[in-house]
Structure formats: C-alpha cells, structure tokens
Length: 409
Image (tube, rainbow, N blue to C red; front, side):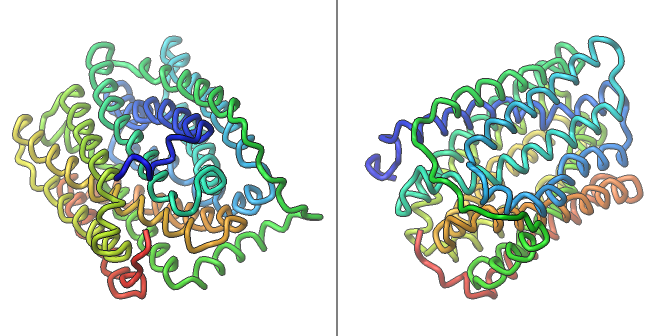
C-alpha cells in the first residue's frame, strides 16, 4: 500500500484512529479476561461460559434492531463518546466486585451484556461515521489502517491478560480497559470536523427502521450474500467462544500465560491481513478475495480441534490457526466493510450496519448456547470440529452469488 494512498494526512482521521487503537487494546483484555475470570476464579462450567458468550453478543440482536435509524438520525461522534463512557463505567464494576470478594457469575453476565450493548451501538455509529472522514477512494485504506492497529492490540492485549491472570489469578487486569475507554472518549472529543446535521425526522418509527435496513441490504445483490455469511459465521464462530478457553485449559493443559501468548499470535496474523487486504482486492477483485479469505480462515480453524493433548504441541497448533486464520478473517472483514460503505449511500449505512449487527448477534447467541451445550455433551473437541466445518458454509454461499464478480476495492 503506497503511503500516499493512506489517510494519515488527515488529523481528524488520526484522532479517530488513536481512539480506536487505545480502546481496542483494553478491549482484548476484557474479551479474554471475562471467560478466564469465569473459569479460573469461579470454576464456570461449559454451559456457563456459553451463556457468558451469548450475553456478550446477544445485545447485537436487540440493540442492532433498534439502533440503525437512531444512528442515522443523530450525530455519530457524540454516540461514540457516550458508548465509550458507558463501557468504562460497566467494566469498572468487575475489579471492584473482585476486590470486595463479591464477584459472581451474575455480575459477569450483567457486565458482559452492558458492554456488549454499548459496543454494538459504538460499532454501528463508527461504521457510519468513517465515510465522513475518509474519501470514497480511500475507504479500503482507512479500514485497513484501523484494522491494522486493532491487530496490534490483538498481539499485546491477550498476552498481557494471560500474564496478569497468571500473576494475580483474578480479574483485576480488566480495570485497564475502563481507563482505555476514557482515553478513547477524550480523543474523539478533540475531532475538529463538524458532522453534517442529520436529516430531520418528525417521529421515530423503529419498526420501519428495521424493515428499511433489511430491505436495503437484500436489495443490493453484492451486499445480501455478506449478510448470510455474517449470520452463518457468527453462529459457528461462537462455538469457539464457548469452548476455546475450556479446550485449552482442560484438554490441552495450557496455562493462562500460554493461552494469552497463543491468542496474541493471532494479532500478528491479523496485522498481516490488514496490510494485504487492499493489494489482494486489486489483484483478484474484492469479491473473489472475500471468498478466498473467508474459506481459508475456516480451513485453518480446523487445526484447533486437531491439537494433541500436550501444552506445548497444543500451543503450536492453536498458534498456527490463530496466525493464518486471523490473517484471512481480517482480510475478508475489511473488504466486506469497505464494499458496504462503497456501494451504499452514507445516509443508510447506520440501518444497514444495524441489520448486520442484529443478524450476527442473534446467530451468535444461538451459536454460543449451542456450542456450550454440545461441549458439555460431546466434549469441547467435537464441538470445535462442528464449528470449524460450519464456517465453510458462508464463503460457499458468497462464491455462488454475484458478489464474486465484484472487483472495485
């Protein structure tokens, strides 16, 4: 990617990038810290881990259904700041409860649901806000830049979470994330560019917002297949969220530090995926690149349930899957987001993003619960095999759609 093609000359974009980079670092600690706290501190069972994952992702369905039109009718930057502050407040309750010896699974469930809801609204507003800062011909580069720093946080965040949990054997590390959200809100508050006033609306019809989002998504033949893949990948991908930590600890015998470093390896791959996404799209076309990357990610995920019951060898298998699987998954995600921002008007991006969030969140809830139940019934390894195989369905549908012929990136 040529330096001139990146939007680094725009100070407001750099501030947005800085805010996301800081909050993403802490978010990784929380993402991996919640199940670690549940397993190590509270002795959670597979079904409880599945429920925790479901509550983390469930708000995407309910908030997503109602938030699209709300985002399109309001200034997006104010929403981003408000959601940062809400996440900081919710996460601060977890170490406080632990220090007071009051931490319980209901406490983790509630925090996961609040943070999940705020994160959904943040992501919808962010997706709709970015095209106002980056020109249309630089959207892929802007998304790649944001994803690259997100990938760097994937390296440092889980590794730090694993080390801190190894040292302190508690959820205190998640206090760091509350601070990062406050810093993120401060950066967003310094963006100078004024947002255009949203279109005036005499009344709010959330049911119409939902139907508009679905209609706008399904009416665009290059976007509709991505919605199916989002739902399918969310369902089967949540098998990993429900079973991954249990599999690593109880089947492979890995320590928290080993698991943290293994997950961090995925950040290296994700960074590579962010860097190659624009070039791959230019070489073979965005549509074919999405198909190839999503299918490749699914195939590498098969290495996870194939890992032998040995901590060091298991770390090699999981680390390889993290590096290459995350690289390809990030490539597909960047190109899919850029495609939506390119082919759809900015005025409807909130409702369309909400449709994707709702589809992904709804299927994630079902997938997390199913993964937890199957993990308890068939065992974590079998559940992970089912999840990895199911991740191939979405790319197959996209490969059979008109999207595969789309070339612009």
